[in-house]
Image (cartoon, rainbow, N blue to C red):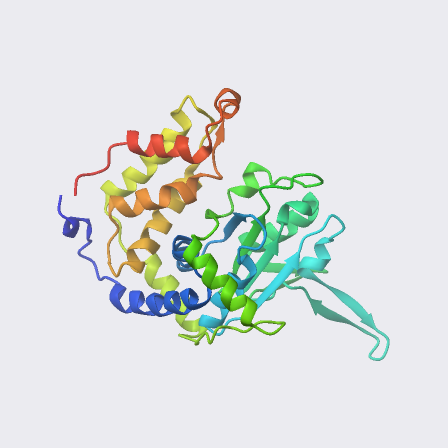
Length: 329
């Protein structure tokens, strides 16, 4: 089957112009975030797909810098919440405070009223506070004292987890992890990139700089890009491949909990985003395969026997992906 056969005859979105927009954003981010090309592409794909991202990496690898830089590329607002054990839901969503001067209750909006929200170390907050944020992520709205307030799109949450320190943490339940469209792993950069990072940082004054990031588009263009990405057509064979991958995780003897239907949906959504990043108006099986690990790694649990053996989730998922035949191109 030729790549053209994955196209649909219906009207296609302007994938090439969309790719140019994302190419410009990617170029600006890479001026500041060095040695993390895969992470940048995955975060951009999540933004195109209108999803939220769980970031996992050791401290000091530029997670906060990535969020603020991404926001600058489209002139959006960004905010950061440092999750702590004493953080309350109202610290996330906002509250009403009685104003003595006007004798009325005034709304104090929480940090969720932004475009890009960095939820730093989300697993350090108690379950009630985690649930408050995850409700906002799902509903795109906040209810304060019975009044429902809609968030201004685009809205995206990037939540971080520290893979090293687990003492005093509140792990996210599987049902809540499933709300994130991808789990992105941030690794150490290679030596050349790290040397450049150190040289730049050591030359900056306290407070740093934005690296001369140029605004590529506005929030409206991001919304239009998300709509164009969602409109990309996928032939039934590719959808069937995504579903087969999700089902294979449930049937694997190495997995105690497999990916649900939302996992298959997320595979197709991220597959569309990867196609858009490549300037194509159609999704190929390779797009789905590329999305498999970041989309599925937080949706599956290994059996105790496999976990004790030292194998990690990515190794098992890679074997599962290789065992599922892809449609011929």
